[in-house]
Length: 62
Image (tube, rainbow, N blue to C red; front, side, top):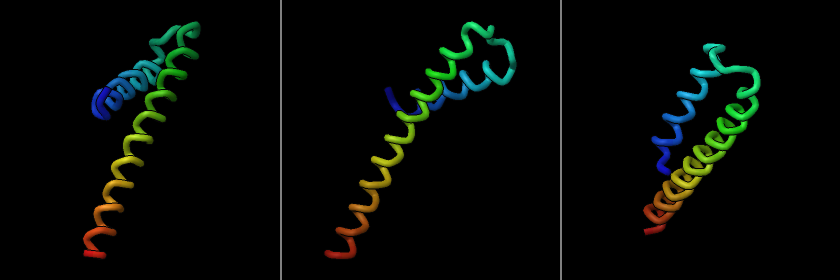
């Protein structure tokens, strides 16, 4: 899964939850799924940030 795919799914889930169209029985599952997508996106962002910092360090050293 790409970051954009995860982000798009997360936006859809949040829309469902905020619209109150989600039945209560499905709400916990959607919240759990949203939390997993948030974690995935955070990990991807951290990875890109680390690569960027590493590139800056190499540029300064070189």
